[in-house]
Image 1 (tube, rainbow, N blue to C red):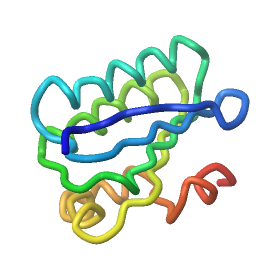
Image 2 (spheres, rainbow, N blue to C red; image 1 turned 180 degrees about the horizontal axis):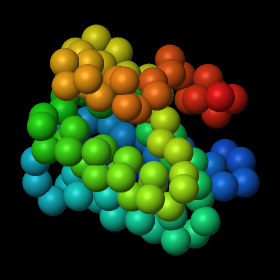
Image 3 (cartoon, rainbow, N blue to C red; image 1 turned 90 degrees about the horizontal axis):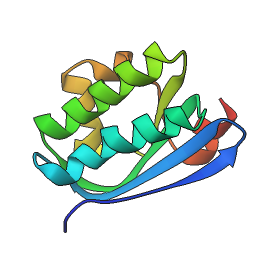
Length: 113
């Protein structure tokens, strides 16, 4: 399954970006960074990525989150990760990104943090 991306506002200044499928090298995953830039332009300072629907990720996919994190941090915002389990969480853990990005069990937990 190719990557699917959607987003919704959950509070003033807070957006949830839901991803599903494979977050891999290629033009599809570029949408992540493009959407983050648009959300920042709209004044969203907190971006929560819902990863519960992601089936696989590669190094380019992880790079999209690093790029997004840098853009959000430069804008004075905060990036939160939600719903990553198993091999998906492990991909962030082995690169120590779980010490950079805050991870939460669910979007609800991330929204309340």
